[in-house]
Image 1 (cartoon, rainbow, N blue to C red):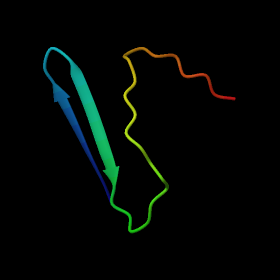
Image 2 (image 1 turned 30 degrees about the vertical axis):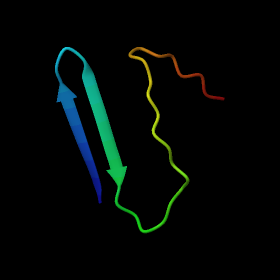
Image 3 (image 1 turned 30 degrees about the horizontal axis):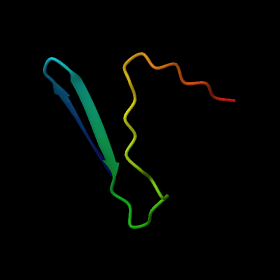
Length: 40
């Protein structure tokens, strides 16, 4: 099961977690609003 939260003030914050017993070596990533992701 996952948990997500959104916090709106003058800025917008979003976070979520994965309630798993193992790790994918995940890290915290901060992305500017309207950032253009370029995937292959």
